Length: 426
Image 1 (cartoon, rainbow, N blue to C red):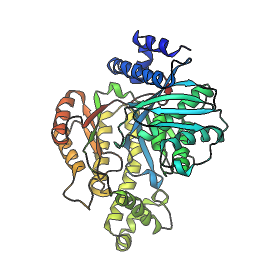
Image 2 (cartoon, one colour; image 1 turned 120 degrees about the vertical axis):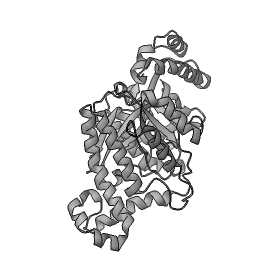
Image 3 (cartoon, rainbow, N blue to C red; image 1 turned 60 degrees about the horizontal axis):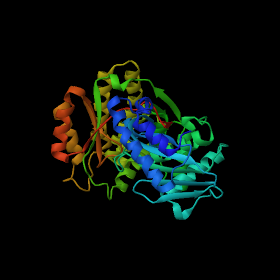
């Protein structure tokens, strides 16, 4: 393995070009990464010196494509890894310590002889590093000391899962540095969920980590959340003639926790009418027969949110089938149908607390004006504020980007690619 100076020289000479293209899909995108990787290597030199055995790793952010607010009621989702990623430059050490210096943040330092949950570290990235190491040990895999510098292009707070990318990145480092790359992507995702749930203290699901770790389009069925069924969907997005856009509508997420929680609570209240805890275990036909009783007990919004769940849960199957058949027009139709369901039935496009503030709804209205009949658009992630997703024909990309950025500001429209690789060594 080359030392740091030799590695920088190899990158400058184009010897990493093919590896970068494999990860970042297009030659243009790969060329843009060259300076990023050199800059990160120089960060490493400044902090850790000119070390031997330099290696690079990458883990992507993710986008939710189908199944809006279905996972918490054990439904199906469709997600995809994207070209925005977290990158690490690493070298092993023999100190039994992991040090991770992320650009813009303080150093995370974990002594591998003490991997129990730290209450003081909960909510901090140090807990994620410790949790990944602990999870590897608990599953019988090897760990060891290493030093790393990381940088991420996954926009924090964008719904693209910057935390999952960081967790999977640490897991990918451990996998290749100490396990010869033999730990499968699903296991790394499950360890990442453990790290976030137990060590970090956030009760997240598995979708974000799985999409980052596996890459490409994946569908996950959470009918048994302890043993989710994960299936990779083979589809060449780069060849479909569309761009994937995420638009940051600059909405404020503050004070929305109860709005998010109410969706799950109301869906589960409907299930309780039938003696079930979640909607996935509830018979849909029985639900429709009993709407009068349900609305009397829990109100109309709970009924509408249940209608959304049943529709979007089934819709994921249709979306996957459309992709597998190469029918992108049908896929776009289903994306718009899902978006309409989120808007009308799930009602997570704006907050009832602030009816004058509806940036997500406005973003969708502009998207419809520009793309109707040609592209697809929907609320992205939790909703109420934040981002929307659009699939835009390549020839319309400039028009669409100009239209949304005229309202939400320059740089608010992120043009992404679906990345075929998940967590990987570069």
